[in-house]
Length: 255
Image (cartoon, rainbow, N blue to C red; front, side, top):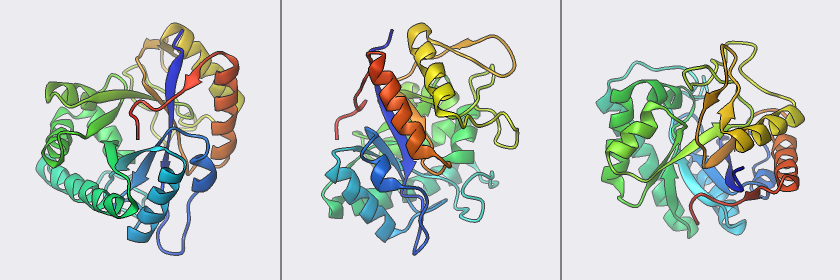
């Protein structure tokens, strides 16, 4: 059984006077924070506030770039070429890196958001463009990728440090990708069900899917979506249940 794993969450997803989720509490529970960087959400002040909170809680920081689509929260594919996606991602990561310098912390990794993350999981050209952008920005940046997908393979081919992620609160397909959010079985809302599934996965390496037999996945990190209703309860129950099962939560990269 896996004895050590990271717990991460997508945070800093408000902007202006509008907030999304309970970032302060989530940052007291997770090991790593994927912080929105101005595409699907966030702005300089939101980034700065979230980065400061992450530093206070000694949480590792990752950039969470997405499509420039606040109205759709980055969950709609915007037609763009792979090169355009690479430049968009570079601009957003660079923005967060600049604000992180002002906040006295650093960006350690990159995890694409929403529709962009799902596309990078399936489309090798998009995955390669994101990997190239990350590599050119900083050789010290890692990538957090959905386990077993094109982005993971692209990062490895580019010799970028890559870590695999599974989702506590999302359903899986037999190809290793996430169930589309348009389907009723896309989300897992019950924290006890989510925690039981995770413990079974850590014991066996097998992830249940909605369209077949369980599939083999590897994981360095578990994601709980910070914008989901009940996200704090989900993270707290998972942390408690994993601890009771003898699993230590620790960052996959040190802050």
